[in-house]
Image (cartoon, rainbow, N blue to C red; front, side, top):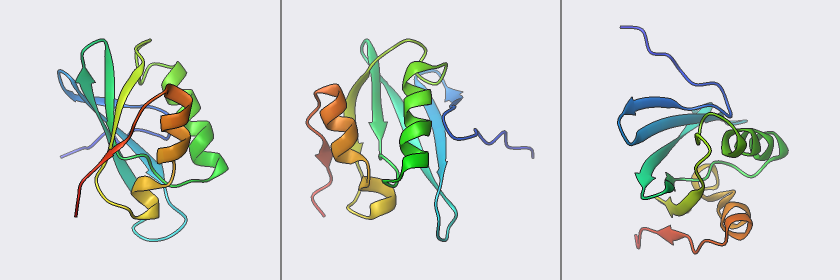
Length: 105
């Protein structure tokens, strides 16, 4: 089975209303997955990826490109408080006027 892995800043549609993005990490496991779930007029992102310049650049490309399809980021859910999942939570939330959500445990 061939899996078409999206490069940083791009997304793959897995099902209608569900897109997959992937960002590199400077430590194992080498990448983190970010999911986009259709949310009314925009997208809810599940996880934010690590906080570094390369990932910010990739997010900016995603937000203004085909990954988001000219639709806004309307929500942010972070699964847990590890730096590869929550690192850019504040940056994304502040830049889009969002209040991030996170699982309790």
